[in-house]
Length: 261
Image (cartoon, one colour):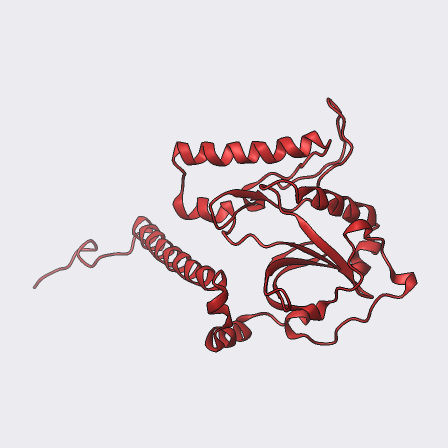
């Protein structure tokens, strides 16, 4: 009679289980990254996006956002509902000028949508903010400060710029540059580390962008890989200026508790 030991039976020990889980996680992560790469290549190809089959896939997979569904468009704002958008305001623009494709970001007061301007055939990142949430939290001044910074950014190649803004009765729309290379965070996760020449290249462009803001007495205050985008040519572009502080003189300080934990 043959007696099988526990080892012969292949007992699932804790260390073996950890190894199996690690292999499974690595496999799933690799598959997910491959799928993300494929989807990103399709989204960045304007000809592919126009293909009926690709559009049908996007319609199936996209969340039920009002802008994406083109449902119940907001009316123009009444005088009492107006928020002063300053020189960036385009009173003739409206949501129906755009074909909203997908949500590419979400924040405290709204979301960012990838959109194609119907007349220009150009792609933009459109930031849609809820007026009610802004007024409830008394953040109107804060949002206008972000708008001011965005307007100045158009003059620098490594900063996302604002093309124009408009509003409806309940929403603000900021029409921004669409940067299609993805977050630095995504590329760092995928590649684990960058070679030193590449890291120096990114660091130099980030320093150039921050130096330009500092020359305008603006402090960025939210530098992280998630807020650093790559454009189609591999250059970095800083985005998300919600925590910027204007009018900070040399050697000035701020007392606001902010940033990303």
